[in-house]
Image (cartoon, rainbow, N blue to C red; front, side, top):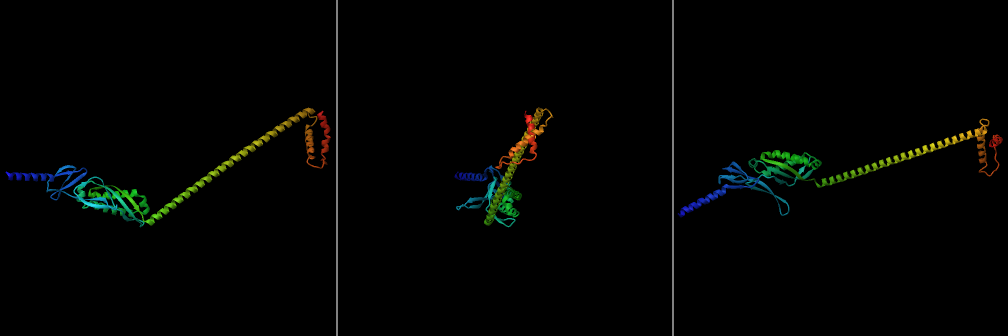
Length: 325
């Protein structure tokens, strides 16, 4: 009876061990590649899976991890795992020296975002997937940067990222990997190149400032000239209008004076009885006497020389006397 119990217990223990070894629980977004007697059998998805112990065995894959050391530096470790992570993975590659088209050595580090799409290809098409992706990224980055000059590589990051992603995605398609994004973190030229670039940038800024200042002075001079011209035009227009108004006033005054004289002449003609006496002689004699009066003013010498024609004017005084009667 005791021997039967021992045998039964042994068989039960073997069943438990066999069942435990055949029961596989796979986490979400993970898969396990199962080989039966060394040959690919199937892929276990997330959840509970049952395999044949000692016959079915999971195939391991190499994976890359980055850890921070005691001194703050990043340490890269490779581990062999029997589960494949289907989530998007980030690889941060260390800095490397790259030569540009114009023979300038720059330090560049890149970040790669990729995802395993076909676990079977990732296991059987490449022996060390992380190392292959890292070396492929480094060589492709050298080729892409080597086709560009320094200024182009500094100002064309989006173009470089797009070109790198396209090349790496095509190359890793055979391995069942899809490269989603490639980002260049830093592009560091040598110290002397950086100093020269800073001087060039400072000189360019000084040139732009001088150009802007010159354009401002030019615009100010143009505005001042336009303002002076408009002021001169307005002043000339005012003077012209003043002269016109003055001339018009003088003309109106002369016209009114002439009309007054004409009316006076008409009144004189009426007073002397029509054309019997010439009123013109009267007016001339009157103006002549005013002129003679001004000749004696402004001089200490009281002797005044009268022209010969004055005798005729004096002789007309009698006629003036008759007119005033």
